[in-house]
Amino acid sequence: MYNVFGDFMERLQKIIAESGYCSRRKAEELISKGKVKVNNKVETKLGTKASYDDYIEVEVNPLNKKEDKVYFLLNKPRGVVTSVTDDKGRKTVVDLINTDKRIYPVGRLDYDTTGLLLLTNDGELTNFLIHPKNNIEKVYVAKIKGLISKDDLRTLCRGIIIDGKKTNKAQSKILKIDKKNNCSVVELIIHEGRNHQVKKMFESIGYEVLKLKRESISFLTLDGVKSGEYRELSVKEVKKLYGEKND
Ligand code: URA
View (spheres, rainbow, N blue to C red):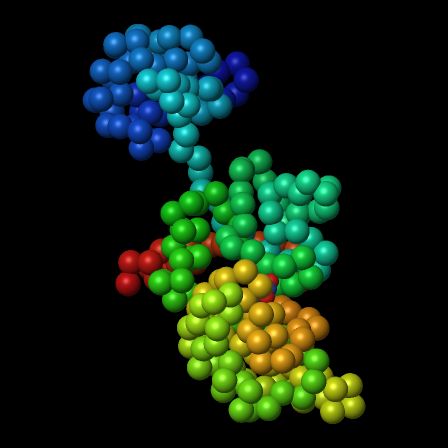
């Protein structure tokens, strides 16, 4: 059933139960006791329907309603902030995605870092992906100033102290040594996501990062997604990410 605005209407106790606030039976009890308000009006009738856009309060608590989950893979360009809004009025990663859902980025890439960024409204998956204990692999390609040595990379990969804490073991590969321009290109694989981690890791062994791109997160890559573009994850990909969670 839809209301005059075309919003889908659902029984109030179902909306409350779906939000995870309490069971459907408990929701019925709360409605009967006059503890539930819809758009600031107390509803005590059990058959009452509401829309997912209505403002619902249960025992004075605003209800966080269940929303369809969406998952986007963005190829972030340079010069875009990884946040939902920006107080300096700069373009954000959320501005690049056409959706009416309240999405947010999973972790962050610096203003000048490019590459793979996930955005979603799924808090559970976000928490899983960003928690270091879950060892989610992230592959970065960094262009650095100077000609890096294998010894320096070994030091980097064994784990080094940044911000007073040792980084976990990492893997790396030299992709290019450019003697003419005095720079190197290195692939670095890490499993954490500390603030400015890659730049700080290279800095700590004496190299400045000139350019940084994230190539992949877990099995997700940028294949077929140009800079500034995005795609939705398939159901299979989301299940696979959740699979990693349950492995
Ligand atoms: N590490 C950094 O230093 N910057 C990023 O944007 C991501 C990882």
